[in-house]
Image (cartoon, rainbow, N blue to C red; front, side, top):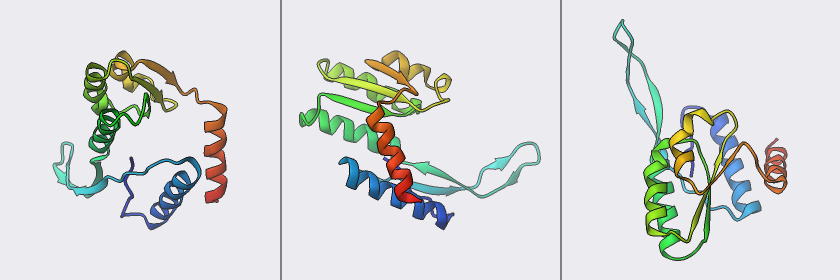
Length: 145
């Protein structure tokens, strides 16, 4: 699950190439969210500024996890995130499917932000990825450059 930026064409092109490589090389299904423009106010001066916020990826992840579990397409979910918005998905998944497992893979340097997720996942791997996964990401990185 991901979202392509529309405000930086170079980043969007690299991201698209990366997701294409993931799909072709690892049988990964990419489901896209989107970026929405917003105009928050800045601090004490109350000035507005333009920015973008990624939307729908966490909802898409939740839907896909539950769909795959209900259709019995998996026994384990490898969830790479530190996004605590997915905590309720993990809790509900474990209630509905006690024989299925969620393996939480927390990206490096995000351990502190994901405390709730860590408490609810079946297994935690913080910044520790199998050699084949690392090699795949290295290959994709080389593929992109």
